[in-house]
Image (cartoon, rainbow, N blue to C red; front, side):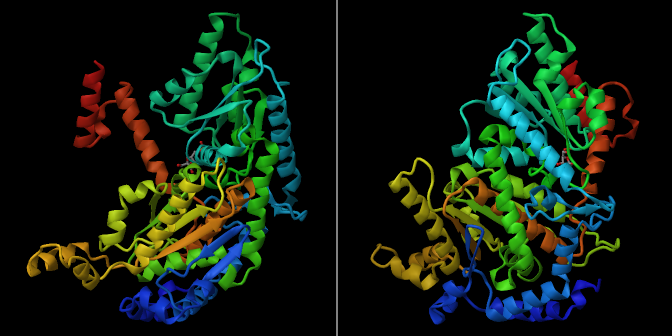
Amino acid sequence: MERIRHSDAWSKLEALAAKTKRQHMRDWFENDPSRADRYSADACGISLDYSKNLVTDDVLEQLKALAEQRKVNAKIEAMFRGDVINTTEKRAVLHTALRNFSGKPVMVDGEDVMPSVLATLDKVEAFTKSVLSGAHKGCTGKAIKKVVSIGIGGSFLGPKIVSEALKPYRNNIVDVRFVANVDACHIQDVLAECCFEETLFVMSSKSFGTQETLQNTLTAKAWFLQQKSEQHSTTIDDIAKHFVAVSSNVKAATDFGMAAENVFPMADWVGGRYSLWSAIGLPISLAIGFDNFKEILRGAFDMDEHVQTAPFEENLPLILAMLGIWYRNFMGAQSHVLLPYYHYLRGLPAYVQQLDMESNGKSTTLNGQAVDYGTGPVIWGSEGTNGQHSFHQLIHQSNLPIPADFMFPLRVPNQNDTHHAMLASNCFGQTQAMMQGKTFEECFKDLEGKGLSESERSELAAHKTMPGNKPSNTLIFEQLDPKTLGALIAMYEHKVLIQGAIWDLNSFDQWGVELGKVLGNDVLDVILDKNDNSKLDASTANLVAKFAKSRA
Ligand code: F6P
């Protein structure tokens, strides 16, 4: 593909950026009463107000042209078609097949994968119903009351964040807990609240080779056997009643000791950070019931249809993606903040961090050339209103451009009108403050009659001045039900796909995480006295020595 900087739209956007930086959104709103309505779009239960962005019709026109010149639609079609777009791992990218309710086949290597997708979904459904009905019994004949999901990265974040976000839909049959970190504090805290007879462990690892997950599962297994042996003799099928696995590496799972019938398969064309729609979502299904889990898939399917068919001006993922390109490549932004004004959605920033940063945190193009432009931004954020009392100061008054996505549910469970009105007012007020700011003159006027000298008043006014012109999107939805959440997550998946297409990246491998794992294992060998420290640099050797001393 042509170098992005050589595209016609790129140079026009550079010119527009210089012009836009000399303008202020306040003036645009004052001069165009229709701006808010024109720059809004609705799809799949999500209403996007993108009018508080540093964009004009000219900018949007060139962003649309850039998407066309970068052949974004062709990339979207290639993904859904099952083309090998994960070129370095020679795989298709088909998390969309997992929620394909179209009835149409999805071909991989000449074979329709839908029968196996649906068979696995049936297996998830059957197992969920067996556990929740009490039919699935533990080794002493008791029903399951606790599910411990062991996994990390995409084998943890999706199930955890979704189960948290859909807390109002949780059943009162099983309590689902999550363990990810190899820090033993994590699993010990969870095991302390478990009774071995009533606990089911779901070990999720696409590769079945992730150190943290394997170690945590070994610890859980040892705990289970120790607990059981204190009261009963142990047989191998005891493990089978309390341990299931989700993996694309079925052989490794059975070699590990998982009963073959307890291994839920996943295909290698499902990326870890795109896998909650697969059997990796089993803990979600156990937490909220299979029917609700299926609704999540349906919401994502609706967004899949939307991204493939909606015109630019109405296409939520495309609009969000191209606004991100505008800020990252033309307006100097290096990060993007997610601000869900909904306590149950507080985990979304962490989820989108992996989705976005592990996909586009790269600097090599598909054909192996170094990029000469910005790529994936730092994704961060936390629930509103908490952020207002921690990092919003920087958002409002630093010279760092940080575009924001605000999210707000119009209705919440256990609705308290006073609280919800306050939550809404904070959310919307923040978007207004970011956009309009407060001028020096306004601050100076406010300080009249405060007993300040002219110079004191002027100095304080300078400190109180808010430049404004800080861009934000506001995403509003009726309520965060399973379907809306599925659509919201799929929307961010497609935003990442589109931005990766613009930047000419492979958004679906993650070679950058390999070196740390290898070197970590080398350090572990030194710590465990399996190797000397000759391969370590002086700093790392010192660190290891300090650790070894503490263990002595
Ligand atoms: O961080 C690297 C990574 O491979 C992620 O992409 C993945 O979600 C996570 O580790 C866990 O991998 P697995 O599911 O294979 O244990």
